Image (cartoon, rainbow, N blue to C red; front, side, top):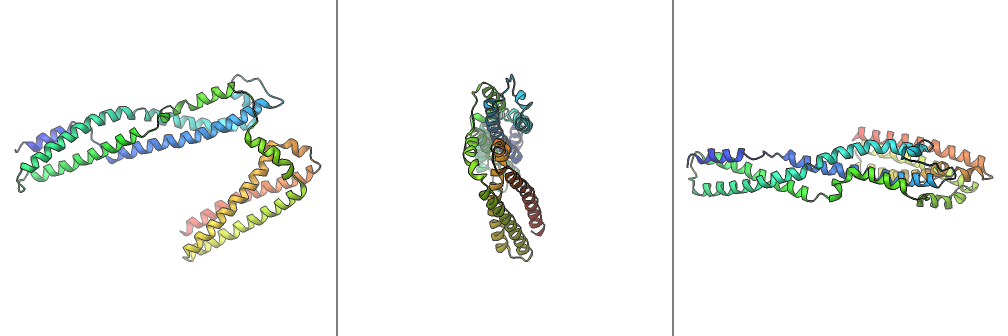
Length: 310
């Protein structure tokens, strides 16, 4: 029975040596594809809305490729600039993902052999005297075999659970752009919504009231973030969290209002131009733009202040 340890070790060395990092790498790869795929779909949906609206415009151009729309539409250019790096990352991740099924075949074959080895080791240990000098070495090898079987099973489970559409995610850009190029012109639901809301939102009394409310919310966010930072510094974490949550909620409301008005300025300048209150609207829009910049700067400073104190 003295040669069994060497024989077991020899059999074990024939298998692919697995590490916990192999499982982490597989999990991380799937998460990367999921993350980039989500960003890609979001960007392509926005691109579709913008391009189809550009097709529906009075000055619509005849385009042979998606880039043609970017020649006259700044938003298309910006979206393409943002989407392409994501597409590159997604394509690279998909290339790595394509290797996982082949790896899983190797792991499946190895796993069967590992389980056979495990069975032989267990059988050997039952026969072997507890005081045998070889026993510690065999038991140590048994632990390594068990660990590799566990890692193998976890990797195989990860691969099995990968959605089929993840493997084709690198074709999203090409397929979507092809569909956009042949799609009929249309106005997006978001544009229709703001076309209906704009006349009311641009009324002088509502604008003036909204500017005042936004300023009040910006001041409240500043006060709450300062209170949160002070509470954290004094060791009152519960109070700090409460103030921060209130600040987050108010900041979200503020940005929603600012984004709504700046969207109207961006997309519905025609409604502003034909309004009798055009000058007042333009003054209000400048106030919203300044508040947006100030609110973002203030929020970043508040976050950094909190982080330094924790």
